[in-house]
Length: 170
Figure 1 (cartoon, rainbow, N blue to C red):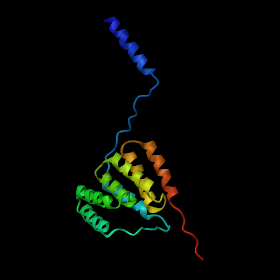
Figure 2 (figure 1 turned 30 degrees about the vertical axis):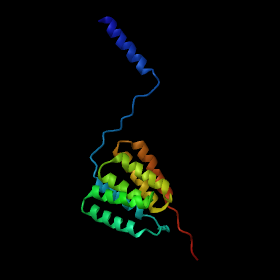
Figure 3 (figure 1 turned 135 degrees about the vertical axis):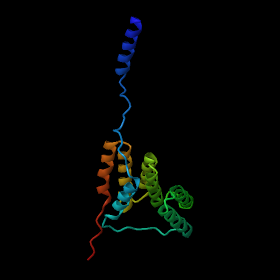
Figure 4 (figure 1 turned 90 degrees about the vertical axis):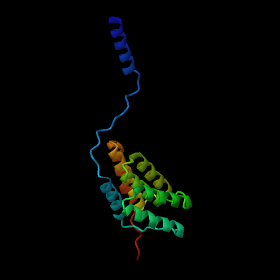
């Protein structure tokens, strides 16, 4: 019995000195209102005072966007995501559609997919303006909701870099 106790202590010490830290665990996550998070993300997209250039959209994509908007307003999030998925088959990599899908992921409390979609939108997008602010705000809120406060703070600092003043016109 004493040998087993000594072995357990030795194994414990070896495990502690293995050099790899224990897996990080975030803080316990407080209850989150996903609708409030999405409202915060969308408000971030409206705060700027810059020129925004919107590409021409395929009429079929516009129909799917209108459908997704109506479905989201009716609280039918899964069908709204399905409409956005169909739109993304037509307009592959559309950063606005990807960001919208990230916001719907927030509504479903799917924090990691929300962050991944917002990151993909940022990569595909203009990296400035309202869409950029929505991307980084989504990433920050998703990280915070998962308990990753340090990662959320890094994302929050990126939001300010998205605003670029419009050119002075004389």
